[in-house]
Image (tube, rainbow, N blue to C red):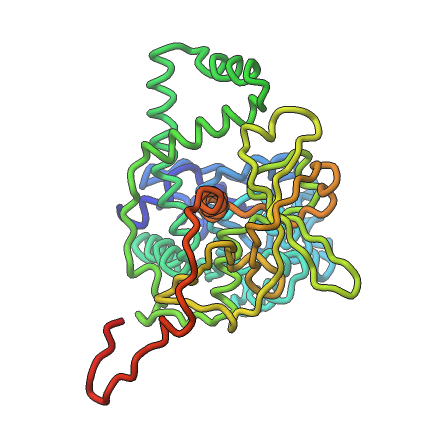
Length: 405
């Protein structure tokens, strides 16, 4: 798939000169419409209610210096002095609200000095908490040529591998959603009711069951996106240097959904609780009870393995795999300061209400399923006697010879 084709959907263009076909933005809009891209046009920033609907925009083009509509004659409007920082405050608030609901590309095409705008974005408090969300800033005069304009669109995606990956997956998800809708509509238009009623009879959460069915169907039937490997390299063609701290943060984000008791009112398999006792090491509890059992009753019992943090340098590994012993499971990424070692000999049955306020996250599949399966294997293990002391001591290997291991 060509990169420019990922900009499918509706473009939103905000510029007070948008209805002037000879203006810079008028020329840019014509290039978009010539490629059959639908354009929603604003001459001023949309209000808060309208901004909520921009979550599905393909991309947004913004003019930095929007002249406010003062409802005055032109000669009178010329006499009105706009307060310093007026444009910046309004634009930054708008950008912050958009970033809360969407990761769509935002392009600021302007007649002002590009450097000043970039500096304003870099120093803004509104965007400080939004993470690494680059906003592309360019002079209008540099993108009036259609080839240059669409090359800049492609360049943005090449420099933003996270947005590229999500857009590629979203294209296949949308195709699969349409296929699901058409398939089951051809069977019965009330198919959701069938799943809903069945779930109610099972006394489980019908909303959760219906969501799981839809997501599992999409995941099992969607095509694998064909990513371009070069996108995941730096613009100079070299691989990004990833630090150990980066790896910890990335894999923790992929395997642990951070939560508090305010985020969810019901338990899930993989829920992680942290009990901090003064003067002793913090204790972790992970719930391994299956979801089907948790959805029955208002205050279900949780089957929790108890664990404590372990120093990473004390863990033995082989080719990236942790060498586990029979009675424990060490889970990386989930602890505050390191991996957590859960003890299979220490299973506690606790009520949800007892631990709810200690909820710190949910260990996600496949990691949560793995520890559940490991505990099941532990319960069904066959006991074997220990090997005698010294049996596994390695023999001395002469210089130049290779070990059998």
